[in-house]
Image 1 (cartoon, one colour):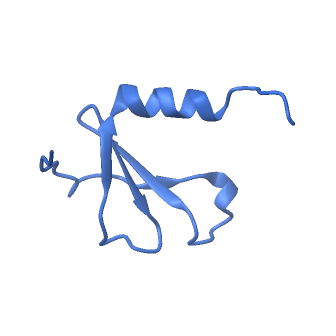
Image 2 (cartoon, rainbow, N blue to C red):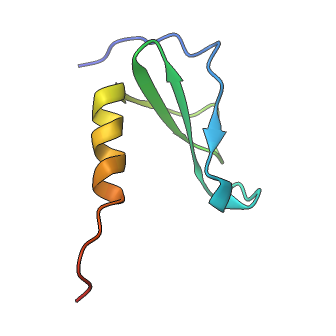
Length: 68
């Protein structure tokens, strides 16, 4: 399923942990959606998910889990 989302006015940001490197992902929040792209290929494809899905994704990433 593919739907067009207008990201022309999106403000892309990346993690402060990237230290200015280009090897990172960038995220733009616009109209209840989150666009995710590779900072090395800004003209490449963009993964678009709902803001709720992106929030759930970030929540999972930041969960404290025991180490093996």
